[in-house]
Length: 244
Image (cartoon, rainbow, N blue to C red; front, side, top):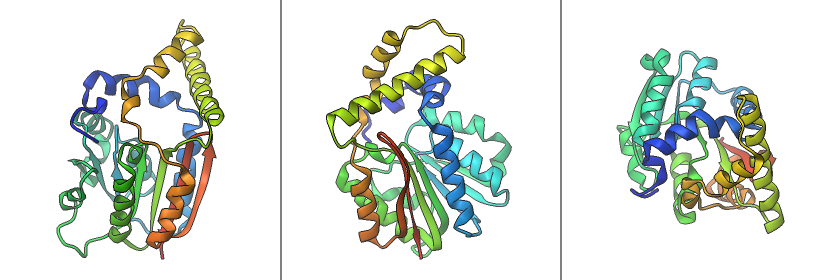
């Protein structure tokens, strides 16, 4: 995630928060999977980190379920953090908003005071795919080291398709979902216009996609248990693992 990323552009962030994020295919299903994983892990969550928090939607929903928890919301995009601050005003006493970049291990220094400090869960939504593959693996190792016993890592992620045909199907799913959302809002754009915007979106160049299968294999190598892809539709996935 470099300094020239589209996600530091306030206009890109505004359009994403107001329209594109809500039009993701199966977005509610992915969030429900995340909440169910946390629930069935049977771990009392006193603290958690939302890496690449965006507008704070994941942290907000977790705090609604775990009202006594403390959340660390980290993102490298100040426009995104400004949106999170507005969304999370009801939870301001239970959270800290941090401007930090996951492309370096230094993100840990902005949250943890000592090497021994841990959290009970780490979640991330559509963020880690912006990192190089080497850095992805390093970050997963850092997350593992910062989880308490039975703590869980959950990643809602954009992964690579296994073939050009699969990539085409994934793109069409996004366009179909965008068209449905447009109609719901009473918009007048055609499917062709929505498709053109999708294929030419300014943040597309930030994507460094990797298969979900490769990433869950990495989690197993690092030491995570109960590792699986718990949801997948085309190139959208929810995968997770627990530090037992």
